[in-house]
Amino acid sequence: MDSNPHQCSLRRVDPARNMARYYTLSVEPTLFGDAALVRQWGRIGTRGQFKINLFDNTKSAEAALLRLRKIKERRGYR
Image (cartoon, rainbow, N blue to C red; front, side, top):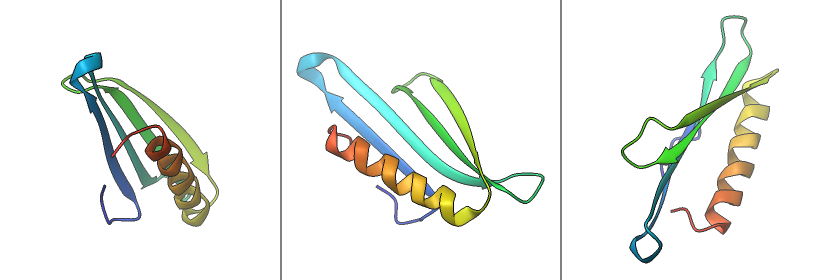
């Protein structure tokens, strides 16, 4: 887990279940001065998928990042 409030990288690896996943969250500025929460996930070693959520300000995007990080940590991501 990173200490940067604008970025977070998590992994979940379980060799017994052949599981090797990653989940990355980052808050990025948009061209219009808003903030975007960029989520990327998939199997380690692949490009995976991504989703972008737009927010009016950086503070609300950071709050969403923290909320999603807590959810993933409860599911076993570290």
